[in-house]
Length: 115
Length: 111
Image 1 (cartoon, each protein chain N blue to C red):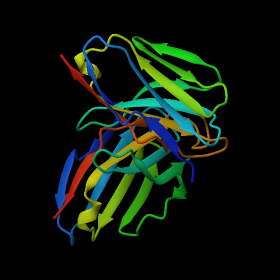
Image 2 (image 1 turned 90 degrees about the horizontal axis):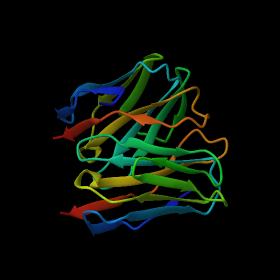
Image 3 (image 1 turned 90 degrees about the vertical axis):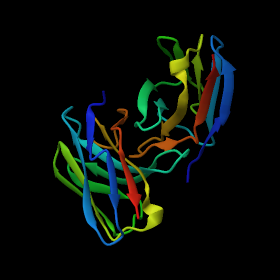
């Protein structure tokens, strides 16, 4: 069982819908991450939050909007997505700030399908 | 940007065989991580390495942080069916906030 919990596990949405992905960790980690993973590829970094502040945006389109309400929660708000956005979206967390050497721990992801 | 070359891309072995895979980089890293990912799940951390030359074991898994800080290998001894999956190496460069991932090694085991 992973200590990073992601909901929902699966999501199917139309291109005009608005939905949110949620991630929660109770390990006291202060850095949280969003990744996108396509089949048979490694995870690609999207966003990094360090001490609840956005520290990295990897030039992600604005139809993806991250939010970190507190140190345990990370959301990814989705709006007007495209079919090519269908992928596994992974959340991860690590101890201390994002520049530390502590390893990232991943959730099981949300499988997103855009119709 | 930085890239990691992970090899082999795939392996087809018999149960009980030993497995070896590695990652190399053109630049140095302060941390090397090895993850395993099963279908429908997120990557699970297997071993973390923090010092050049460090050799660390986790059960049947052994990983080493290369002396040059530009490479790492993962060995699995006496493979079993549950070892099937995709193995990713990942490195973190000095002062960097993000990981660089290898392309993965897909392990298939014939019983």
